[in-house]
Length: 332
Ligand code: UT7
Image (cartoon, rainbow, N blue to C red):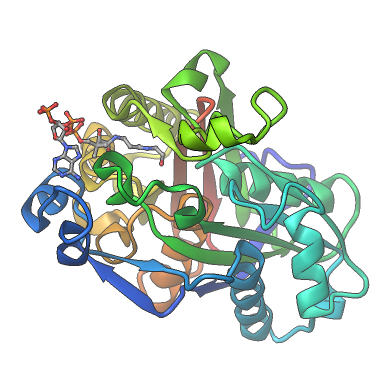
C-alpha cells in the first residue's frame, strides 16, 4: 500500500475527557417540547455531558491531552506542537492551543487552532501529521475539544437535544513503514454554509444587543439537508479511499464516522456494506461532541480492545461548511 505522507506518521496514544454532569433525554423533556422516544428513535442519543458554568473547551482539551501524554509515557515538554480542533474556542483569540499549552506547561510547543466544524479533528490530524512529515517535528498533539452547550439554544428543541461537551486527544509521531496514516481525502464546499452555521458574533454580524435578541449566537441548522449530505459524502470518501488502496470492506477492522446521528452513521456503514459491530459508536452516551467525536471514539475503541496493532481503520467526518473527508490508518 502506498503511503500518502512523505514519512509514515501515526497515532501513538489517545486520551479523552468529559464533564461529570449527565443530562438524559428525560431531563431535556423538562426543558423543551420533546421526548425520550423522539430523541432516541431519531438520533440514537440517550445521554450527553454538559459542563458547569465557567468550564471552557481548553479545560476539557487539557485534561484529554494529559491522559494521552500519560498513556504514551511522555511529558508536556516533549511536545513540539499542539493543534487544537474546535468550533467553540474559549475566546476568539488567543487560540485555544495557547490556553492548553499554558495549562499543561508544554514549554517547547507552538500551536494553533483548526476550525472546520465537525471535520476539525480530521483536518487537524492530517495537518499535525504534516508538521512531522513535512516540517520535521517529532511529537505533535492533536486535541479535539468542544463545549457545544456554549453555542446551543437550550430552548430550541431542534438543536438542544443533539449536542454534548467533551474532548479527545491524540499524540502523533513517526511510526514504522506501512503503519499510521496511509491515505486521506479532504473536501470543502462553501455553498453549504447557510445550512449549518452560527451567524452572529463574527465580522459579518458582530455581537450587538440585536444579534443576541435574534439568537444569532446559536447554532442554526437545516437538519434534513445536512443529514442527506453527511450520509452520501462520508460513504463516498470512505469508499474512494478503500478502492484506491485495494482494500475490501471485509479487511476493514473499524469504521469511525463522525457521531452526529446514529441513523446517519448506520446509513453510511450500510453503503459500505459494513456490519454495525465494525462501526465505532459513542453517540448514544455522549451525543454529538463535534471536534471530539473522532478522537473519543478512537480512544474508547482502544480501551475496550476493539482496535489492535495492524488493524485498518477508516475515519470519516462531515460538518458545517460543508467540510468533509476521511483518513485511512493502519493502527500502530
Ligand atoms: O455534526 C454536524 C452535522 N449535523 C448533523 O449531521 C445533523 C443532521 N441532521 C439530523 O441528524 C436530523 O435531521 C435531525 C435529528 C436534526 C432531525 O431529524 P429528522 O428525522 O430529520 O426530523 P425532521 O427535521 O424531519 O423533524 C421532524 C419533526 C418536525 O416536526 P414537523 O415540522 O414535522 O411537525 C420537528 O419540528 O420533528 C420535530 N422535532 C422534534 N420533535 C420532538 C424536531 N426536533 C424535535 C425534538 N423533539 N427534539
